[in-house]
Image 1 (tube, helix red, strand yellow):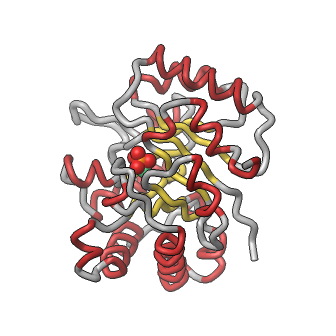
Image 2 (tube, rainbow, N blue to C red):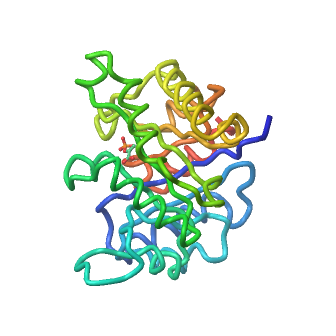
Length: 256
Ligand code: PEP
């Protein structure tokens, strides 16, 4: 059974100017101890406008830089979009794809998620594919069928030999930014389902090696019980990642 390195990622959404983001990144490194974080992979996804500034701060550390979205074409007349090669050029190693806010407000679909994943892989960016059900879907007993469709359609026809870098973020929409966290048991149940689906689509060893992280109101107070679950390999943290102190406490969950 392969060891899966825990992955703790911060999504700074549409917060912070470049200078504010660089300061928060510096603060985070000071708290974590530059270059000495071990046993956990850490990633920060600031807004596009702060990628360069934050990338410069992180350059001498093991904290990875990520983007919050990517377009699928390599270049072209696509006003307002950002190409995968441009993100790689700024030092991004990861990219969030299909975040529920993108699906909800910007019309992203499982099909467009699939195209973005292919583009990211083509440029050596590790995709963090975000999936999750709404409250209405959970109440209607559709959680597993929604996850099934999101995974199947998002990963359809992905043939890259870099697919092993994929991270899946299970983020129940009703738990994002609401303060409502899935219980550790609810999250584990969904993660187990996702791993089973990956095994069906891509084989047992792929499923066993792939990191599946939980997102939805993760805080220092709930990270420990989430991380104790066998299929939870980390966290995607929104609100609680905006302050270096809180995010550092989440990253250092083992010290609690
Ligand atoms: C997110 O944005 O991916 C997220 C999980 O947000 P929050 O932690 O604020 O719920």
